[in-house]
Length: 25
Figure (cartoon, rainbow, N blue to C red):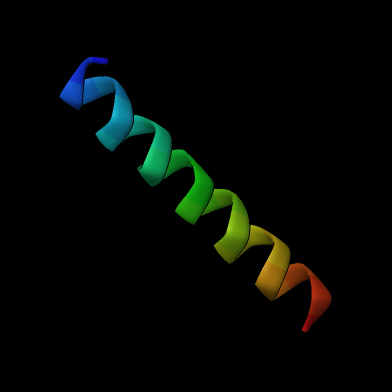
């Protein structure tokens, strides 16, 4: 598994979670 892929995946999930958090609040 590529480390850069894991890093980018984590960044995307964090961004989506932030967007969902602000949307819910």
